[in-house]
Image 1 (cartoon, each protein chain N blue to C red):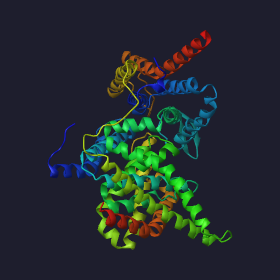
Image 2 (image 1 turned 90 degrees about the vertical axis):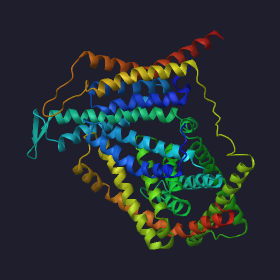
Image 3 (image 1 turned 180 degrees about the horizontal axis):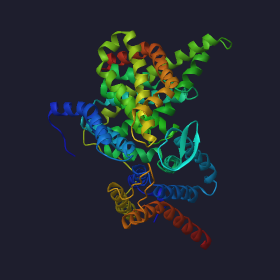
Image 4 (image 1 turned 180 degrees about the vertical axis):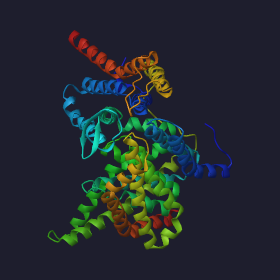
Length: 232
Length: 292
């Protein structure tokens, strides 16, 4: 395997993969390829980009402690999804991902989000939607990590971000719904899918806000305490 | 020879990729029917005829799609009847049916994927990309039952100290929150201790390797090679547009051109591999049993 030595280059790749490569790949899938192949081109792009992210993470020097914390938070959010599985759209995953991201860092947020999707789908069923869930939760975590400072300071900002994340999650998953239908991407279909998903979108947003307000402070305190005590 | 599920997970994973993806790349009813046939055949070979009952609910997809598509899409020249001033066309009906069958066949293949690719096997596949991610995944998987046990312990400890009233809902909720709080603190501290223990034993000193019980035998390589040759042939034919259907306004089929026939044959052979391996393994099992 090639190891990238230049720190700046590595940093650029880490930012470029999720933010640049994704849209480019998806755009290529939509505009260049004919036929009804969008769905699979998108899935392949998603897997490809996430593999790149994982590969770049593998090359990075990460403290063992931080790695274990990521595993702990992933396990907690998987349990959270299982505990609330009876109530549709009311899940603490997104909020746990956001909390991890703002206290531990953007990449940890991405990992907790995407790995939670993989693991909990062992229980809820793997399918072509798994990469989309991985991407949606991963990106919510990544962005939350970059916005860490304001989100740590203000509970209002945290709640607003949680609500937006719920909407974003719904919008990303509806791209999948539209592509799945096989007609290719059309804005009308997308709007229709978003329309039918409104109850779910509201459910995601509300549950994120509720869980962030309830869990945000105690979780944050605990993570901060561990950080202080052990210097993660 | 071994049965399909005992092959190296990477080979099996790539097999599934090649058998599911081509169907999605083109809305070709012949290809979809081949895929669906072998998907169901494999489930039946693996789990007996009872599997058919479990797969029956998936028949909903083609039915719904066949009804819904003509209601929204009014393209096509063969008008069946007029509904609310909108023509319902045969083309839209057939397109809807094909899309439904695609969804159905994907779900059927994923149903066997889910039972074959168990957690340890997916971990192995993940580990080939990044050992670190695989380690995080397997740690998280181990923590899930551990935390369940820990919650039980905390609850018992708290009950023994008399922290709960039985008939008070608010007290129950507050107690639940307290248990969660204790659990999370414990989980984080326990994680740190695990990490320190790993460091003390030299984790991260050398190059990271991984243990796996899956080897690469001749049959794994054979499966990989067969998948690659047959799958790539199918993908190539699809990529060159040899199997493309024109649906609207009038259905134009690619017919039985040589390229199309080769592609169908290659894909059918690809789909038959797991059925063949499964039946062969079972036949051998039976013959060995009767000799004893």
